[in-house]
Image (tube, rainbow over all chains, first blue to last red; front, side):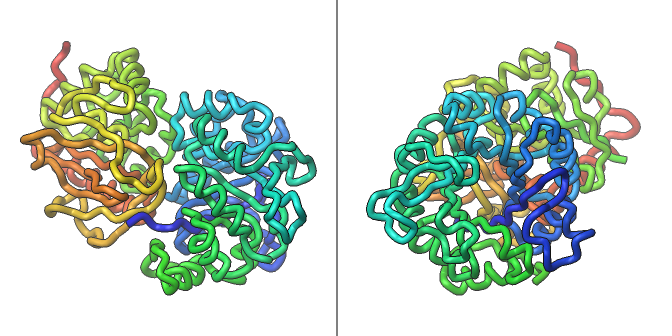
Length: 263
Length: 220
């Protein structure tokens, strides 16, 4: 049976992990490949690198980070942030990534998703959707709007309609982040997840708002997510990946348990 | 040291398979032309995506006939994901005619709850094989695909393992020195590295049996 994936997300800028490392050894934990290798040993099912720099002159650094990570962490690697063309995606894959995630660039040019899927296959193309509740953070009644630039810019696009379009264009997976919940620790926006999961056939990755193992259980059970992504709760060592998986398994969710995983 | 040639035909992520084989103890060469793999101990064909463009690239680089000849000579071969599917006669994904080394076709996964099938899943073995030596029966491997090979009548014996995602599909095959896996051992952590190390070991043993030199690959 297919396992539900638990995915740590690393925000990378200028070759270093830049968020959520305040409470651990900075010199060591700030190096993306080191952290990725540790997560892989703990049982991470996949690793996501989000290039929050995304400046054109920082690409070389990112590619070097991807290449070093591919040498030591033998789990799938997704890179998001700043990829705007087939050529750039080719470079990222060639450096060792398995998938590339598109956010703002896909909203601006859905044809990019189509071109990349045609060239590299849908399985390598993830579309990241940042969504905000229209009626206010506590009210899902009027649906969700797509926002870009980390939530700073509204697009007017309906998140559910965009999800369907992105899949039609060739996205093999959707990474759905609730901007209302991101960074709040209030739990994933499960109605948002459920609404998208019911409209598309591809796997949906839940993101934004996790503060504990119960949130992961809710994302799968109530939201129907195929995978759960989180950043700070892993970086700050509040919960290990193995702990989270143990809670999910106890709730009857199929997860990959790594024997001897570091906790 | 055992030399493994990874066929480079522009099929996406070669770094991971290259690094994983190196970690499994092989000396790895990327082979973009047939003359660069003639003296290797084993051949690995990776790949993701659709069969049509992949076959076109193999033909464009003059690799199709040498790969067939390699397999016909009984030399060690591992196909990964698309590299497994290409061994069969054709693909329903885009109607492409593929290598046809084994009877059967590549078909869309049936009754799947979601596609692509992305993530870690069990690989249920039908029989023992040295490729899986030392790997737990319930070990999970990483998959990412929507199609899988369906061996034709008479080729049932090549099936080494199956996996369930809605319906069941063939997740590993083996016949003689020929092997293929639908999952990605290079992305499957410790168990994946173990499988690759087992393949490297098989290639080394085959090299030792054949003596000092290999039979030359027949020219076409």
